[in-house]
Image 1 (spheres, rainbow, N blue to C red):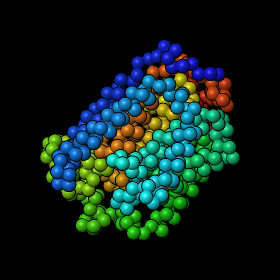
Image 2 (cartoon, one colour):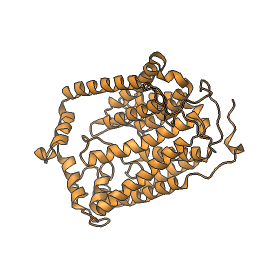
Image 3 (cartoon, rainbow, N blue to C red):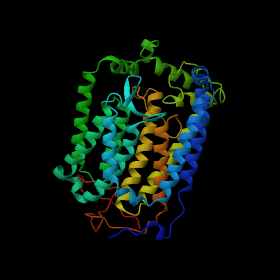
Image 4 (cartoon, rainbow, N blue to C red):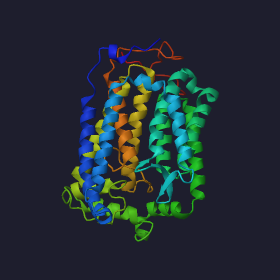
Length: 404
């Protein structure tokens, strides 16, 4: 059945609570980017607002992306899922080509276009979410089969994850795999297949750890005991923990951080949560977590109310993408995970991350505008939707439940 254009539907208002929490995070992030970066900006660029101005530009670009995706029918993007996925894979390959990819801190993760730097791995998260949502929706009940479900799914995810991992960008690789796993679970995967993949993943992880060397092994040691080598491998983790701990309940005050004076590396990007803890204290950290909790709540609620299977899967993937990246960033700063360079969505300095996060919010807002009573059948989608109580080997949460 041909989808009814969004313009012809009696649209609901967008999810204003999701939009309000997003704006609050952007405002807080802008303040913290300036506070955490002006020391480095002054010393290295002779301009206290160097990073602030660039962050505002990226927020402006991302806001345009949000407005566009919030107005364009989300189903139109579905028709472009394959070309977008292929373009993303091409960019991931190009970033590895000498002379095209730009390196920093030993990793090649950016494509430099004049004054602009694009990080394909950030785009890959969104492209993968879009493509898998379309792919799973088209597969329907065969998602639970080994040959038509698990194997092609593993190949698709494996190609993208491998291209990101060799940059190397293990943090983003983990996020991509985790988001894909969530989509596969919600899309109706066989629980036995999930258990087998999980066991294989654990085994691969053990083998990977056994063959680590160089700076990667140092990061594992720093994770286990950052205080054993504070002047070396444990520096990032230890200084971040000192910043968090020194903030106390209410913090030292906005702009009064001492750790940003070259003690905490990447204070305005990956480690910005540590500076939030130092300047705004436990109260500020809880406030930030509360805002992200609202984003997750509204995102999953939009997914639950989605008007069709693709919408439910797409909204689930977008919400998982933002939520999992947030959890990984905070876990790294608090030494709950080994150190890896992952930004805090909507808060950290970073062009690609900011734009992609705002585009994801725009897509969620667009899905939230479609009435839940509007259901468009897609190819291979079963006419009757299975209830929530199913045999133990299959699971269908909101991904396959119709909401009337």
